[in-house]
Image (cartoon, rainbow, N blue to C red; front, top):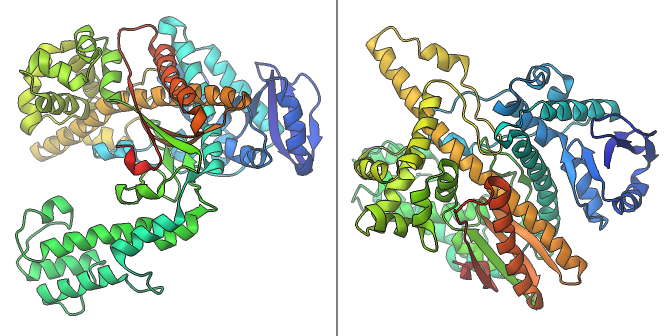
Length: 562
């Protein structure tokens, strides 16, 4: 059963709709005050809720103690369907380019593919969603259009089933993000303040530096003979460095470390402490941690490859030097699990490379590869494989690539083909159906070179896009595995809670999850995490001979997990 939940002048409208999106009865109008109770009543029938975005309704419901089993998130699904190679032959992408729904609901950059990235880092570029809402009729029309698009996807290679799985996992992710934001990461505020005091000194007055930073600033001013230097100003800092013969092009750590000037050590120390102060200092603690919980806002599918992002709070970047503040409640444990070597293993599954699958069986993947083709040198095997995935074909990685190619032609051939597609201006698609952005018109124009200089620039742009697409197909498929893992784990933890064994998902980062559980529930949670990983593999790839092992640590504080 599908139930559509939409805004209404009196509060909300709930209407039962068919799988095709047509109404099967009149809408029921409820006030905001009645909503939680009515939704709880409907939930006993196990419907699939259809809404604009989970963020529109679910935070209010979760705050009232209403936890839903499943939903169809129109905005998240639209962002996939409008650009997927699997639906390119349907009317949906063309309708999506002109419908009002685009402007009012879906992130503009999700619907109108962004320009081709100029460098690999664009895989991590965040997409910022918009917040407006539409009414019952518009949402019903959008759901019907999405259902028609999926129905017209070919069943060849199980494309339709794979796309349906992606939409379900992405929608589940929308609910999980809300639930984790509501629950929050257990956070010991006094421990955090003590860390700041130990490293930075006493909390400064607004507009002033902490004592440790102020002392380093004074030292830099003396060494660089710049009495008024503001180390927080990149322009001032670069001028001061150049005046002292430190000819760097940036203030990045790796470039500064190439100099042996006496200013480098205090400057690197300043940058490290400044990062802690600005990213996770006292102001951050005041803004994001309340009642012993860190409440970040996750953005599902906020990265072009399908990875999650976060809006404020730096949820995806809890630095090591404050992880000791992440502590389980009394009588509870933190269960931290990460999928070992996820992207390389996903590549094995995508390429169906049986020899590399054998290397990964019952052992560290890099060690297995080293034993098969690199004389047992694990470090070389790791450099070679990651170089193939990320397109690092120069230096040590480039030197090792021929050996990797001879040993694993299918795996290397898979990413090389993805790179060739990108260089030619074509898109690539993940296992479940998320496609890479189409290059901009400017990119295509750049490839119509007439001079040697223009040709060099065109070749550089093509190679850059090739690096992007070779990683996109692997990183995006890994993000899909993680989404399935999360959804399967959520389902199992719900069953544990229903059985009186409390355990909650509280944190997620690409290939890592954190569960906060009562001590007597730990063993059941570990089983749930491992079973969910196996289920995710089978959902995505079927019964293939590739393992996706999960490393698990049961700790009292996050810093003890690794």
